[in-house]
Length: 337
Image (cartoon, rainbow, N blue to C red; front, side, top):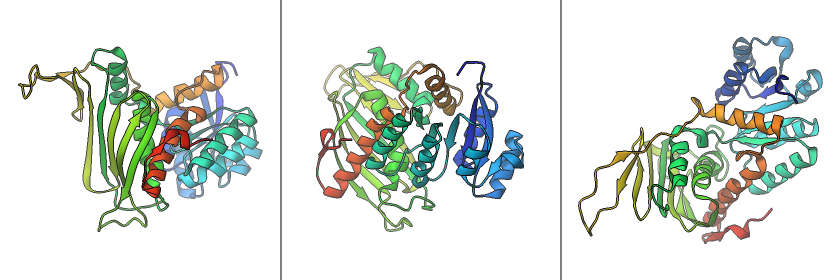
């Protein structure tokens, strides 16, 4: 694959989260969308207008697209439960795959998918776009700079008003759908999770058939400790991210990271907060995903979002689920491929 040869892509799932790859790749000369796949004719029509592709490039089944038009990669943006079967069809056809987060809905299937991609000799990535957002890029840069001390106490809370389950009707859907983003950010910034103690929960007004929230304590191999909570059943959206070290605290205020130095004395007056310098980040987080996916295919540079690297995130997801299910602490060495 030369830099001058566009990577031809088949897009499976072209509505909702399936629109961003169409928008980004249609404007990127490194890529050439060649086929659209969706069960909704209405969504296919909208995607045709967005990409300029006609009816002859539109299909309701991936198998038909794979055998009809030439392609190098498949972009999968369907409900998570369909990611595995669709990725396997692409692997069998020798196509690279970028799949929306989460990779799949359970640990065992994730391990199998990564092995199957490697056996097929194709590149496999997961669209963990949150790690490319300005606040996460800036946090990682701040931590790696060493200017803010060694992080040790972390609080990450994200309660979401998402009352309608839609496709999130399976056990621990909130983990495989949303915690996977949080855990990717945490591992990206603080390293692998070594131990998890967690419990899932619900609310009296929940429309979800299973628990739609989870909380717990995560111990990282680095020694850092995070208190974590997320839910889809909140009455309003609430997001809190705090990182403490011996030198002070980094706090996300909704627009910027603020740094506040540790007081000089017990119960002493806190120093005035000051903003943390922004680190360079893509204008759109999904562009970071695409840049890394391209480099992986064209240059063989494996990114943090590769399927193999994403297993570290899904290991932490499995630890959350297993700890809640079994009502005990789960260590990383218990969750093996």
